[in-house]
Image (cartoon, rainbow, N blue to C red; front, side):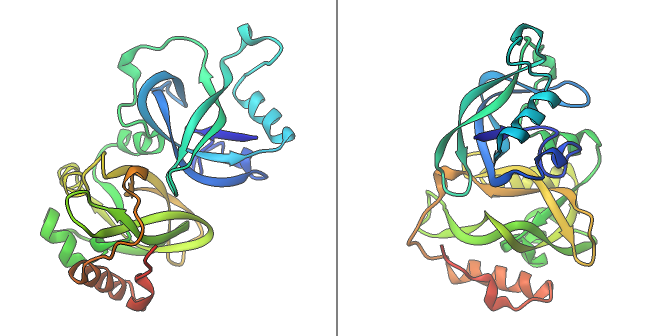
Amino acid sequence: MLVFVYGTLLRGMCRFPALSHAEPMGPALAQGKLYDLGDYPGLRPGSDVVVGEIYRVDARTLDRLDGIEDYYPDCPESSLYLRRPIQVRLLADGRRLQAETYLYASPLPESRRIADGDYRRHVLEKQGGPQWMAAYGSNSSRQRLEARVGPVGERIVGCLPDFEMRLNTADPARAQVFANIRFSPGARCPAMLQRLNAQQMDTLDHYEGTPEHYLRVALPFLPDGEIQLQLVQLWIAHPDTLAEGIAASEAYLAHIRQGYREMGLDAAIAIRPD
């Protein structure tokens, strides 16, 4: 069975170990309204875009999830959450699937709604202050990034576990493609981490065409030489923009190659068209 998770069961969150025996299928989008309930979120029916992950689970794991979510199949009126089927969409290839998810059983006030629909990003931004941003494409070049948002300070080399960089997202206004990351179990996408203030992050939203072209989300990042994942923000392509058979411009590729050189990597491995 496929299960869509959107809160503390996400990778990098406190209840993720409950999915240790599940098969990950990567980030996905669903429709609904996401709410902050304090220590965890709640999903209600609605039309907002909600960011989560899909896992294929066995009966034992599903029973464990039912217990975590206080869902009682034989007594739904006593349940905190109700497990229900919803339509989801994989970010990797745009496929639409049906998955089970846990909907909060009671109405919730709009004052608690998480407008961007991404619980991990919401948790990071609740902490306040500048945000760590991981760049895997042209923004991995300091010159490119600073031309857009101004000076940046310390930068940290690392990777995005279980992702690979692809040139497979098209700008509708231009006949060329740009960098994206795609879920790929076991892969490690090189990325450059830098700390940006709120104005700089908003400026990058403009350059990335958020949310129609790229979505700003939070994902785990692994710094070189470390074993502990940390949550960071980045931009990933909306599935409506995925494209095949279109080339990236040489000027754009030059930024990516420069970023790889700054990370101490062979620039040739950066260029992998979809």
